[in-house]
Image (tube, rainbow, N blue to C red):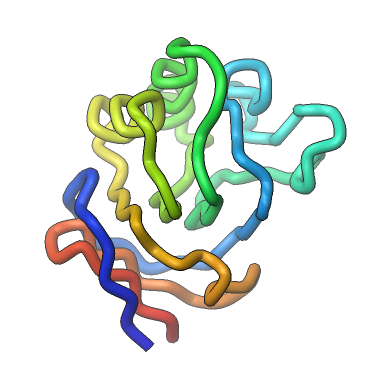
Length: 129
């Protein structure tokens, strides 16, 4: 199945989906040193987003979150790609400066953790394999 959304940042990657129904605050919600979600009570608390295709409804929180995404990319602890319902400015800036493929306006309810996905930012598609 191929889902069509909106391009936030280019690039094409394939990998394993990690899905949450909770919005994510990268600043204070994710440890940039190891890519683990640390926000108390978050559905993914204690889970690493490193090397996963992170699927979530939207970002939240401080503008510093953009730089946390960048720091994770530089330390090799970040996600392969991001897929969202609604990519707000904090996440958009983060993926652009970090050069992480990202597509939004995707119905993330069709994706489950563990699925293999191909995110094609150039064509704004997410293919479920």
